[in-house]
Length: 301
Length: 252
Image 1: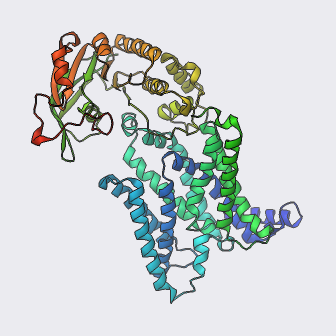
Image 2 (image 1 turned 90 degrees about the vertical axis):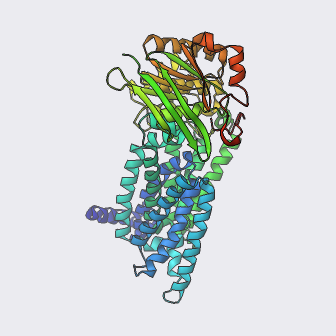
Image 3 (image 1 turned 180 degrees about the vertical axis):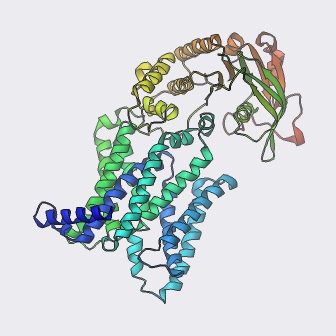
C-alpha cells in the first residue's frame, strides 16, 4: 500500500511540476496533507450527519478538546510529541466512554454533563502543559492544537486510512439503527436494535476519528469538521440522500481548500484554521441560499 | 398465523421514589383488541415500557405465543427528532424498517413494502414529503405504517389516535379491523373512550393500580369513569403522594 501511495505522490508531484495542478503540490508534504484531507473529508462529513441527527455536536467538540489533554499527557509520559497516539486514543476514549456511562447513571442532561467534564479535562490539560512548559519547546504544541500540513507523515496517513475505513464501514453499516435508536429507544428495542451498545459504539466512532484527524485539523478544531459541513448540508438538503452527499462534499472541499489555499496564496495560517474557515464560509453560503431561495424553505415547516 | 396471549401478574414499577404501578394483574386474550384506559400519569405508558422490556418492573409479564415467537410491533406516541431534518417520509420509514442505509435508494422490494404500508394508512401520495412538513396526524399515520412492516402478530399502540383527524381515524379503524381479522393481538392505549367502547373487545382501567378489567360495554359506565379520572382513586396512594394528572411531564 505504501508503494502505491509513493507512486501516487510522485504522479501528483509530476503533474504539479508540469503545471496541471497547483504548484504547491510539487511538495511531497503538501501531497501528504492533501491525501489526509481526502480521507478526513468524506469520513467526518458522513459521520457528521449522524452527529447532527443525534444532537451530539457539543459532545464532538468536547472530545476534540479532550485531545488537548491527551496530547499533554502523552508528552508527559514520554511519547513523541509529533504523534502521541497512545495517550490520545487512550485518554479520549476514556473521556468519551466515561461521559456516556455517567449520562446513563446520573440522569443529568448531556449538555450539563459535557460542560462539567470538558472543564475538568481542560483544567487537567492546562496543568500538565504548564508542567511541561519547562521541559520542551511549548510551541511544538501549536501544531497539535491547530493542525499543520508540515507534520503529516506516512504513519499518520496509514493510521488515518485504517481508522477512516473502519469508521466509514461501521457508520454506513449501522446508519439506520443509529437513527432509529435516537428517534425512539423503545421502538428501536422492539425492532431488535441494541440501543445502549450502539450509544457506546457511536461515542467510540466519534472519538477515534477525531483523534486520527488531529494531525491535519488540530485538536481544537477537529470537532468542528464533524458539525459544520453537516449543519450546512442540513440547511439546503431536501432529502436524507442530499443531506449525506452535501455533507461529505462540503467536508471534503473544506479539507482540500484548507490544505492548498494557504500555500498557494502564501497566507501563514495553520491548516486546521483554514479548513474550518472554509467550512464556515460554506455554512454561511448555505444559510444565505436557504434564506433567499424559497424552494429550499418551501416544504419544511 | 395468530397473535399471542399476554398475561400481566402483580406488575409493579418504582421510578426513583415514585411508585408508578402497583400489583397490576390482567390477561390479554390471544387475537383480541385490548384497550388500556386511564388518566395521564396513571402508568399506561409505563406498563407498555415494562411489556417491551424497557422498564425494570417487579411481578411477571408473560407473552405466550401459540408457536414460535412472531413479530412484535410498537407505535410510540412520537419520535424524537429535529423537525427540520431533511428527511422524507420514505427516508424515515426506510430508516426504521430496513438495513440498507436510508440515504441510499431502498431496494425495489423494500420500497414496495413501504409504499403499500403507507397506502394502508392513506399516506401513499405523501411518501416524498419532508417529515417536518407533515401535520401531527400525518406523522402518527407514518408511525402506524412503520408498524405494518412486517405485518405484526402482536401490536402495541400508545395513543395512536391522539392527533388523528377524521380521515385518519377512519383509516385507523379499518386497519385495526384488518389486523384483528388476521388474528393479531392488539394492546391499545387510548383516551378516546367512545372509540374504545366501539372497537375494543376488552378494556382495562389503570391509575397506578388496576381499577377495572372487563367488557367495554359494562365497564365504561359513568361511576367507573368518575373513579378512573378522579385525583383520589379508591386504592389509596401510598405515603401521601399526589398523583400527577398533568398533560405533560407526568410519568405516563
